[in-house]
Length: 358
Ligand SMILES: *Cc1c(COP(=O)(O)O)cnc(C)c1O
Image (cartoon, rainbow, N blue to C red; front, side, top):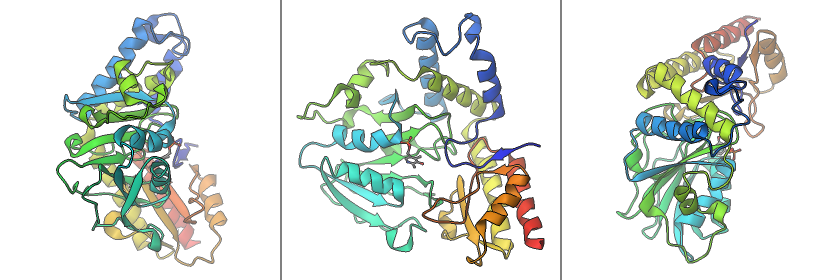
């Protein structure tokens, strides 16, 4: 039986990528060596890093005044690195609070500087994306979470920075490369790889070089963007295998026709699933219609007294795995990232219909 993994992260990888790993894990580019054991100072791996950087630059049409970094520590480390590198002592930043991840980002920024919560949807359990923001004139940047993995909301239009010198910073961990993007709208973008572009262990950071403050505080080297830029993401031993998997994922995206094609496939999958949720009386989606995520579809039983586990068991017997909702929302969550085949979504909607007839 084909299994479909709807996990929110680590999440399903494209089959092509798994096949490449299977092959090259043991013999990388006919070197006779495994990709696990090749030195990051070798030409093989220097080329690999260059290739990944160049692929991402092309896919996202990244302007030349932006740097691309491959860093360890997950998106969670970026919650700290962003304020540490972009703020000076006494500076302020705007944050839009749209879920647990943005709350964590806010808490890390508070250790470094002042935070203005420019907007929040907390009082409605993060079921929508705030449209009106109260940004401060003095803020260095405005931080958003482009897709809220846990609550199933996603920005369809990004907010504007309020003053000329301000810029947007975005955590795109769960929707990076799911759609075309205008990188120029942002000062900095970061994304952990394990949702949409690979496996856990590497984080993509795209930043405009001029926004880095000449901080008077001396940062630990590993937390300093300038050091990572100077060393082409190889200041210390980088997560070579993670970058390898990421590069294979980028190849796969290119093979499918790039970000426009990916976006249209993602729209089709999301439409299929949300249509079923809306039309099937047994289920409902707690998220405001226009903000529904194309990556993480959150839904519950209309009658909340029903037993979630019974439906989850029903699904897993059909090979539809990891559909349990996050504990802060309950119900179900189907993560339908780039790598989820449309067939997986079709099987899920079929199972929803069958279950409702039971
Ligand atoms: C998963 C996730 C994170 C956390 O990523 P780590 O790699 O665990 O640090 C942060 N932000 C968003 C939007 C996420 O989905």
